[in-house]
Amino acid sequence: LRFAVHDYRTDTTASHQQQARRTASTTSGPVARRMRERTRISGDTTPVVGLLKCMEIPTELAGRHGGIEAVYNTFLKLADSDLRVRTYDATKGELPASVDECDAYVITGSPSSAYDEDVWIEKLAGFIQRLDEANHPLVGICFGHQIIAKALGGRVGKSDKGWGIGVHEYVWNTAYTLESYPWFKSKHHSGSSAFVSAVASHQDVVLELPKAGVRLAGSEFCQNGMYAIGDHIWTVQTHPEFTADFGRDLYALRRSRFSPDEYKDAITTLKMPLKPKIVSEWIRAFVEHHKMKNCRRTHFDWKKAGVWTAVCIQGAAMAW
Image (cartoon, rainbow, N blue to C red; front, top):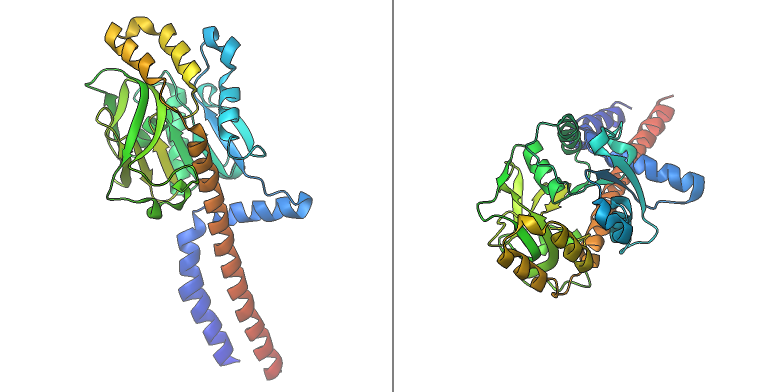
């Protein structure tokens, strides 16, 4: 009995508790519990993505293209039509009470700047910090890309190159490969240097990444066009959710902001092929990657703990 209890204590306190400390602040427990509960009740483990809405589609464009929720629902469901999307209007201070309300979050673009001092932006930055502390899956797009960097210690400001409009193509940082981030693999992406073409519309850029940030891709116009933090955050500066038609209408609406050459060049680039499904698949695979990883961790811990519990019970019975 002493031998069994000693081994049990050694294993749980030295090994399992160390593992527990590493994962206690992550979503492994809550996510896995949520998955088991969904399966128990309905057999449904379809991911729920929280959309942190930071903008509205301009009224002049909404009639033709729909609201921001419709734009993102269409985009996110390109990879999985069953994906569930729950919207929070961050501009009105609507944020999840708990990071565990959704399996992952996506922060949208915005006409605001990450360095604006609006109350809703400060609240959003606080929620981003909570997600980071919990290692909870998070994706940032355009403004989302910028506010995540700002909230976690990076620096955001105006580009000295002016407006970034038209279709932009980012090139992978060769120091980091797709093997390091398995969710970026896609049957639509062969691993070529240019990873994706997407519509851009921004003046602000991430000038400095957070300390934990890893530059994944960029362009001459936007060096930090895409970055990751750990394996729980990744962001992109462009708008993969925008279609070429939307970009054309948006640029026409904002034409007075651009020089004639900027506008003409941007419209010309809209003839380039866009592949939003690639990024949609990345988001879906990113969420699934975390769900599977968290399930494996939880299964391993409980299985091992159960074995040692059985050993102790058997030892106690023998002693009795």
